[in-house]
Length: 421
Image 1: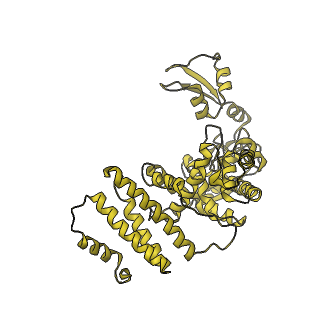
Image 2: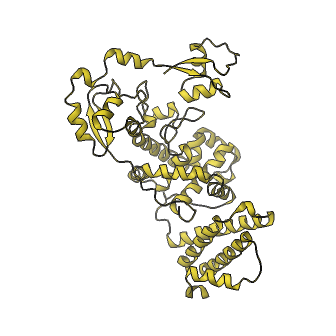
Image 3: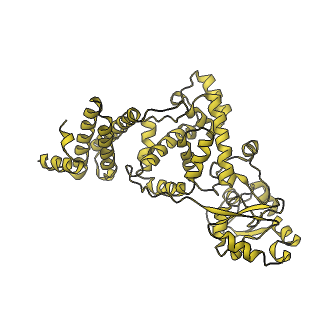
């Protein structure tokens, strides 16, 4: 109980003073992490959950700053055991300090499968997760607002981190699209429209509302958030069938596709990191929420013209309006609500209103040209029909038809392919 009289910094000095052996840095880091852990257990058992949680935080910070590459196999084994024990103790302390208030709160567990991804995201995959976490700051406030409106746990705001890397233009190999990775038929069921001009699966607000509804339905069906997420990933029919055949509704006991078995642990790891980014070695400065103003336009407006009138870059408008597929507002929705950077709506209205109707909107001829835009793609080394089709969001079948490519023909570097978009 002597730790109550030491600050964390003083405690480190104390440990260093007590050490008389010539340990490697890796060994020494692990030794005083173990001291933190053991002391945290003492405080937890005595009922001081706040001090136990604090010491676990210091232990995690130190552990995650260690260089795993310099450790020997026995040191790595001890490292992994410490990581497991500290995370479990920290979760137990947090549950004592902040007991879940409602049945709908997202449960957090720590096990080997969660640890695997926690170690990956704070180690080899840290560069990716850092980018995803930063992008999350653009939308997380909106995610949580929508989830609160549906009386759902805010932890689900981490789902797009795993689904899409929080990138509205993300497209999976199976052609799932957007932040929440909706397939076209599923998107339509939940009210997301798609045509030649726009794809609402890429609309951040609309897709989030659709995802919240879908997840809520799945939670009501399975009465378990982990099973609901598994069904979101691989389909409720597959999960229901697995539950029936294997006679268990415990996600951790079910045999599901490997991707789905990893999916839930990935989200749990993402939740843990996003709750305490500093503890896990990430910046806490992710409050870069996207803010915008809106204007109504009464015809198909080219985004280049909109950017010129508002005094911003075309890329800014594309980023704010990711649902638009042809770099213009759709001719079939009048008026269309166009998002502009904050402070740009007044100047847009002022300049746009001075234009003639002919100057404001795309002509019928220009609209027809955008209905069948042709891209000529030069095949590079390593390309295949499937990778090119995925890149341009077209089918392999159409790609072959447009270029008279026979069924078993091989494409070659330098070959030019027409792509109609």
